[in-house]
Amino acid sequence: MAGKGLYGVFFKKCTKKNGVVTGYEGSLALMGKAVNASFVYNTPEENPLYANNSIAENDTSSGSGGTLTLTLDRVTLETAAALYGTSVKDVSVQVNGETVTGKEIEYLGMETSVPVGTAYIKLHQEDGVQVHEVKFYREGTFSRPADNARTMGSSVEWQTPEITGNIMGMQGSGTGPWQRTTRWPTQEAAIAYIYHLFGEEANAQAVQEMMDELNGDEEVGV
Image 1 (cartoon, rainbow, N blue to C red):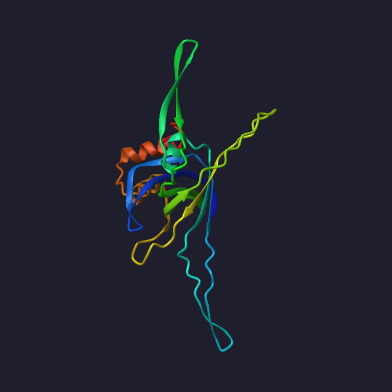
Image 2 (cartoon, helix red, strand yellow; image 1 turned 90 degrees about the vertical axis):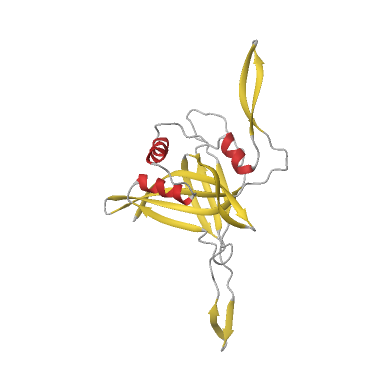
């Protein structure tokens, strides 16, 4: 099965008890339009048992999570506030006697990244048929992207933000999977399943509205 595309980076704030994710709160939101996604598993440390001058057993269990790197078309102020534990406020200035309003996000230095569940959809093709693969990560905390800018030249060079998330692995016996990969024959089914993963049983209207947003009928925002 060959990959051919990527869309929809979803997130929702985790609820936790005694360090274990128990669910999610708030509404399902989009971080932005997906450009690239890459997940690298933490390399398990080998723990060999030597017997008869050789390795008889070795523990390389993979419950340790990894690093998720996402490139988005943008990180809105609302997304940044939700991920990094701050808020958006309205600001205004006087220009030629008129009030012009804008939005502002502040960092006071006491903020901490908010644990969120994350999901995105990879588009594959198998025997001429499209397959929508949901990648779900139960909990992660994201670092703020570097703030880079470049002057415009003779042609437009797109500048897209990259954010990196530390994905948490196993949280104890019986606490459920920290990662899921699920394949669906339609986009509609994949999105409905994402709502389900985040604790929302979405109706047909909600799924359709999300599909319209993802497919460009509306501008992405959170």
